[in-house]
Image (cartoon, rainbow, N blue to C red; front, side, top):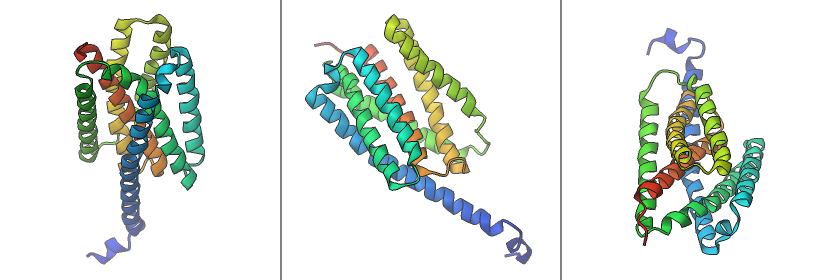
Length: 231
């Protein structure tokens, strides 16, 4: 190897940086896989006890907002310690518990189990497609962040507004937009880890988990609306 290249400032550092990025990405994928276990467990507990369905829609919304944002805040505060990992797993259990309300509705259809598996499969396809794209795209995607944040904010406000409006047309529109926004967010968040924009695997896992959760929830709701077969 050319000696002058070896002695260039930052040469060794660039190799170390690549190793660090790969480590963060590897830990992110590992923690993401582990986080699915408490999610499934939370959904099972919710379905078995009926705790989420027992709450009125208003109480359910308040519990979801307070619980989700409270845990997200705590995770970000402790992301550099093992406490952050435990809080992330607690968060995914909570999200599974909250998801049980939608799951109970879909499983009430004659083909409910099939719809859940289709939504799971569709989410997996989208995830692997975005993960593959993130390795193939060489351009910087950091500029997408602001537009995606605005899109997510619009969707969030839209869902809160529709809680009071109860518009079927608006709900369908929001679900489709949510599916598109968080699929794109998935690409953006994975690419940030690959490019070194996110160096903490707990924060990276939280971001990608939320993308997957929203994609799955949107797909499941849409499948239930258009494909649900009543008994």
